[in-house]
Amino acid sequence: MKLKKNQIFFLLFLIAGTIYVALTNNDSNGGKQSKETRKFTEKIFGTIMNVTYTCPEDLHDTIMICLQGVDASLSMFNPNSTISRINRNETDTLDQHLLNILPMALSISEDTDGAFDISVAPLVNAWGFGFKSQNLPTDAQVDSLRALVDYKSICIENGLIKKQIPNMIIDLSAIAKGYGTDQVANLLLERGVKDFLVEIGGEIVCRGNNPKGEAWHVGINTPVEQSSAFENEVHKIIDIHDRAMATSGNYRNYYIDENGRKLSHTIDPKTGYPVRHSLLSSTVLAPSCAMADAYATSFMVMGLDKAKEIVMRNNNLQAYFIYTENDSTGNFQTWNNLDLAQ
Ligand code: ADP
Ligand code: MG
Image (cartoon, rainbow, N blue to C red; front, top):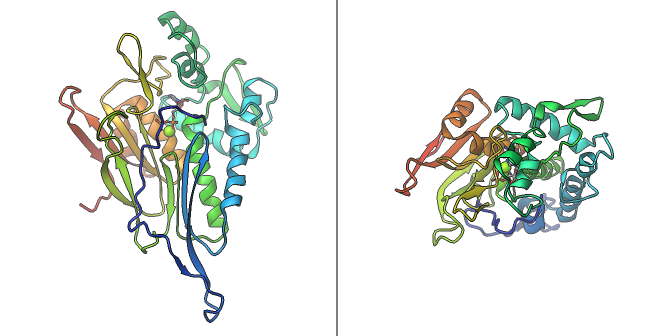
């Protein structure tokens, strides 16, 4: 939930026939329900949100108020948020958003054998992401910071959070964008909206059909670096029906250190080091966007083989992975268990 300098929302969503027209919006049309497709773009959580929905009522302000509530709970970059106050040990009382998100985050940590860990922040910061530190950490510093990282030391009891390691910092960045996307989707569903697509920084929830009455078509980007001529090139377009989708990739959010090492913002909590392997991009479809977001990050941590295992044993998950066998060839390979119309 921060303004990431080099983050462009790397997953374009392509809406077939991107023409947003008021279909019928006339009170004198024989009592027919008026129907209007609306679209807006806003900045939120340090990234860009796009919402397209069919509804007679303009829900822009209601959606923004809903997301400000999420930010006030989950943002590490808002010093007054509940999570910031918990991190400073000023409170242990959880609000509703945290009561929703924390059990899910902890169960994904269990399912991924700790690849996903919301207590990884001290390492994220040490490696120059999050709240930046000046120098990269030494091996000894990485080792000592790892002592602060252990999701098993977090437990939730009667609406309170207990941290067995008092200096532990909880960072929900890898799940909060997806959760915020779910919150907007839930709001639209509560208002009776049947056709919508909500996208926050590449994390997507859609329901029903696009304005042309078709499935929503969304693009998975080619995992190329920002300076490349193929930046934002779409690798694959897929149709999604009533699902959430999130993509994690280490080809955008990284920097090169003075030794020429490429340091990604995804940290392996077990080693304490930024991950580095053949998986370039992990797109996950799941019933909720929070879940898709967290698993997409976890898969970048664990790499292709373990990620495939988890997808295959979890009926709720589908994935599209882009990887390279050998960095020097630059050829992409893909693996997926989506029901793709070829
Ligand atoms: P991506 O789109 O690449 O998944 P996200 O913003 O969703 O990016 O998640 C990356 C952020 O998650 C990092 O900036 C860091 O704050 C946090 N993070 C890094 N490694 C982990 C991890 N192993 N488990 C949970 N959160 C992590
Ligand atoms: Mg993520």
